[in-house]
Amino acid sequence: MDYEKIEQAVALLLEGIGEDVTREGLKDTPRRIAQMCTELFGGYTEEAGEHLSKAFHSDTGDMVVEKDISFYSVCEHHLLPFFGKVHIGYIPDGKVVGLSKLARTVEVYARRAQLQEQLTSQIATAVMEGLHPKGVMVMIEAEHMCMTMRGVKKPGTKTATYAVRGAFEQDAGLRQMFMNMIR
Image 1 (cartoon, rainbow, N blue to C red):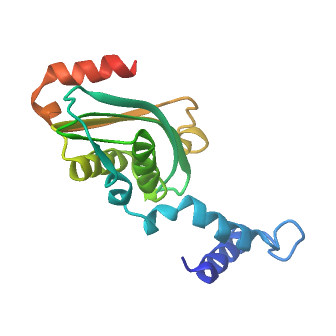
Image 2 (tube, rainbow, N blue to C red):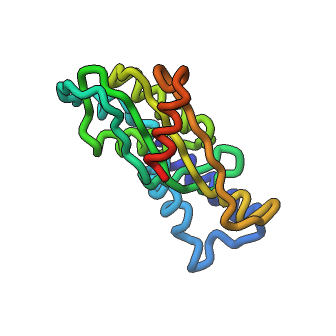
């Protein structure tokens, strides 16, 4: 990450909105924002495959669901936060992954400038490629600050997206079972 460019950009933004970047409360803000970007956008330096490569043999073919994985991301259209819950279900085909690895996979993609639809698809694809399960389904429910604090100003509005791969694409019963498990 280029801290110097981020600091310059933040200083220009502050000047552009009419602020004095030398005043007490703002003089260190460009540096603080640059440091914050390491945390908010750290997903660019990680690969989901690293987390999903640590799998274990399993004879089960029953659905595994991890629900209510909290996440925070930044909308690439407005650079405002969106946040919510991710639900992941997959049907193992000989191997499972430690449950924390699914949450870490979510973090890799959430910590990038993002669209919710894209985030949903990226997580589903990563699980398919990393575990080679019979199928995977991912659902995300999120609130977008671009809908809450600007534009239409509708706090509490949630957007739901889902992605299906493999067996979930063909089997409505599996999709329904997943939806029942996350409710």
